[in-house]
Image 1 (cartoon, helix red, strand yellow):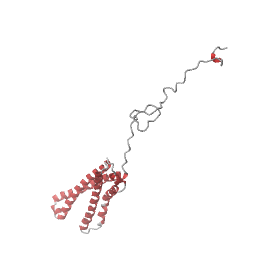
Image 2 (cartoon, one colour):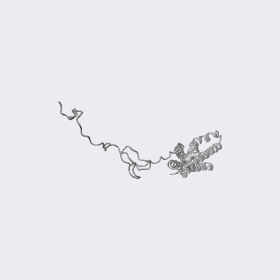
Image 3 (tube, one colour):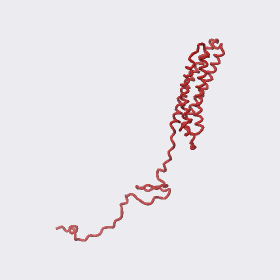
Image 4 (spheres, one colour):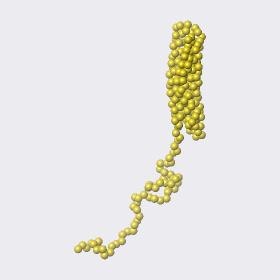
Length: 219
């Protein structure tokens, strides 16, 4: 028979040590730390107003409306179209000037000379308007200030004015030529140059495009 005390249920045993609580590796629960102190390691979350290691989450900035972005893109597209047209116009007037040097009879009529001078001035003005379109589009994408809105609106408005001027002048020039017909065709051609600035101008004058620049919180 075994002499082990565990074999006989009647054998008295020694009491064990008292319960000491959970092991030290368990998560610590307790009162939140004082203001400015980091939160202790554990599963608990710090109360509102107490510092955390990663810091407060910054507020999300408002998103730029699609109308403003579309208007800026149209300004860039219009700048490319007008620049190409201006280069063609300058090339055309330069060729007339070179031809006049070889044959002065080309400028025998003062009207031809005035048309050439007008085309040169218009080419220069259109190149300047290209710069205004680029600056206005960039400012509209980078700022919410009233200055940015004025630049973008002014850039599109100048293009509309130039398109209207070209429509009137082309109709007048075609009508002055002998047998000139189809006066509406040159005017209709200018619609191509006026379409983008008219749309871009409307996007900035109405709806969220106008409200974006009218917000009191401007970076």
